[in-house]
Image (cartoon, rainbow, N blue to C red; front, side):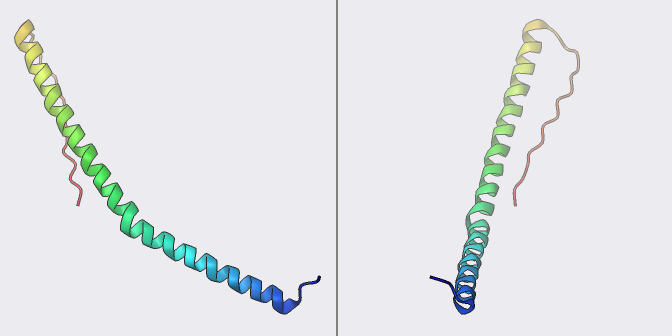
Length: 83
């Protein structure tokens, strides 16, 4: 069975409608879920970094107290804020 030009055009149009719907669903997913998920992930990672910095400072202070080692070492930790 041969497909006519009209049938080809109908198939192409139907395919484009489905592809447009998928593209729209992807945009909604990115806006509603992916972006929010990334913000939540970065907030969690920021808290982990904060805890690491507190722990690192505590260990460094303890080490200095135990060994009498008072050489200055600079460790910079940043708190990342997610808006």
